Image (cartoon, rainbow, N blue to C red; front, side, top):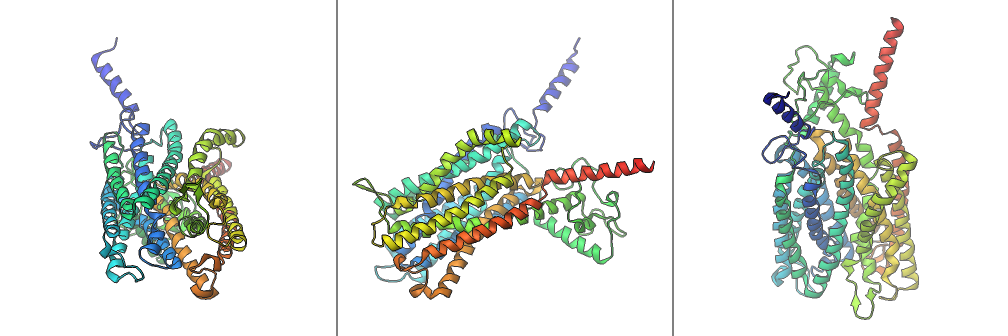
Amino acid sequence: MDTPNSKQYYKEEMDMTYLVSNDRVDRHGKIADKRTTGGWKATPFIIVNEVIERLAFFAIAVNITTYLVAEMHQSIPDAVTHVTDWIGAAYVLTLLGAFLADAYLGRFRTIVVFSAIYAVGMVLLTVSASFDTLRPQTGKKASNYQVSFLYGALGLIALGTGGIKPCVSSFGADQFDEGDEKEVQMKYSFFNWFYFAINMGAILGITLLVYIQDKLGWSWGFGIPTVTTILSIVVLAAGVRYYRFQKPMGSPFTRFLQVIVVSIKKHRRGVLVQNETSLYEVETTYSDIIGARKLPHTRQYRFFDKAAVIAEKDTISNRWCLCTVTQVEEFKSFIKVLPIWASTIALAISFSQMSTFFLTQANVMNRKLGNNFEIPVGSIPVFGAINGLILVPFYEKFIIPFLRKFTGHHRGITSLQRMGVGLFISIFAMASAALIEKIRREHYPKKNSMSVFWLLPQFFLIGAAEVFTYVGQLEFFYDEATDGTKSISSALFLSEIGIGSWLSTALVKIIIATTGGQEKGWLRNNLNNSKLDLFFWILAGINAINFLVYLMVAKFHKGKGSAVRDEIMVELEFSNGQQTQA
């Protein structure tokens, strides 16, 4: 017969089974309960927030080149480089946002704070577009004050984007318990639907809002995204009772620097790694990184193991003298993904053309849809965004189950393979763009003489490349990250977009300088006198070389799973050797 005490014990045991295993907490700071927090209860708010925020960003991104040319009287090459510089800054600043999230604020607070900064920038941009004194008069160049005001507004938007982007996808993934197989599968589905949300926001931004701007003017075109930016904060805050939160864990960059410094110091002192038992680790259940689980030792990058070797006169509590195995492995995990990161940057160079040179092509083509409607230039990227909306559900529903039958992998193919497919497609995207531009320039040089729908292949292919690569990166960089580096890892791959934009700017400047300048070179203010197709062929060549490099890097990459398998093999070999000696 059950006693009251045994019933109470049984109830407490049952309650424990519903608690998450990864130490995420609810809004009250208690270990999160799966029945009331996280999962698909929480993520709809995050997904809707992403739709609204991306709507605002893309409404600006696809229009800003036209705004700089038409309203601020900049040349096309100058406007293109300014836009790519701005987009580059927005995504490189994700490293700052991720640092603050992991070290001090947490992901949720970082999103809210930087969304407010984003909203202030949007307000100033709307003001810039609404008052004549903040724009140059017809035939005149913009004054320093007018340019500074505009760039100040864009700078705040870039800063806001940098704070939001690395945290939203990671915050969404935090809603799923990695110790629960069912929730792990939900997490991978979330990444696909998160990318779907990005494309949904992009489509609304580059169709509805661009159309409003085209018909009602720049004040409305920038004003409505300002309102939606504020609305995105409200939507995110509405789901707070359902969220699981990860507490800030201190600066990962400080921990990385400690590992590097201590390793070098001990190497100079002649310290050697004799065996794994001499490596220091705290004896508590969890590591001494706040809220982070312990990490097993791996045999890669053995030089950094020296930071965890206990030597004479080491102060155990001082991490500038002695690091833990977990701290060393955290740093190893970070540097292991850097080759993958570097070998996927080239796609970002091609992707940046969607908001720059692809639109300058569209501007001189026939955009008529029927007798009375003309597609706004800024809405042309919808060709690529629609591809994302179609391909993501199709991939989730049909392609994954089909591939799973042959590979046995729970996601059909691995994240690395998915990224490789995207990089391969990008080669044909830029080749298609080069062929179409050559046909347009040579056979249809008059404005509006060639249909804009000839651009469909390049938009479709670059969109397909992004679907495979972007979602693969979301999965890969989150999975390979440790507990204390989730946001930093997300920011790392997002920074590719920024670096790719900057490299695009640099490439444009190099080509202009080496081919005769803006008056005689390949990239001129008049597209018909330019040789934009040759620029696209260069990008196709870069993508092809990059794909081959990526194959080599991916082949030799050892992720979390392979590292653990290596350790098991070493232990088996060691134990077998002992048995043989016995």
